[in-house]
Length: 125
Image 1: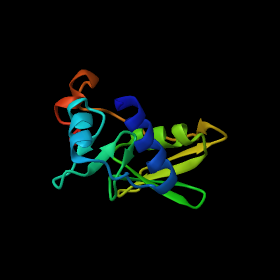
Image 2: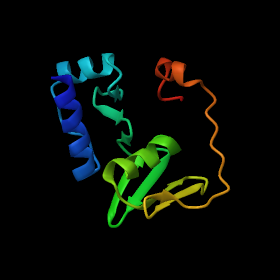
Image 3: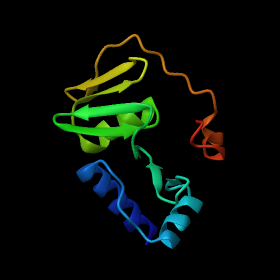
């Protein structure tokens, strides 16, 4: 059931840029499995790579706009959607995918927390 719920969440985000409404019990189960992170009201804050906006990055592709919590997830949205687009953060950091490839950039991304510890506090990571 968890795999199908995750697919449903991703499909809904891809189609609407927002999370689906799911029963609280299902959301809590998904959160316990690190499939989603819940907000203070118990709704989906993010299901990587998608976030419920506003978030650190705005991802645009054609006429659609999505939210992502980090550059890695922003690029993940474009990869998942198999489309070109741009990800921009509030400070103007910009990453662009053209022809399925990351456009030349002088941006360096550094993750302060080792990947093995990301789920200790995914909001911070």
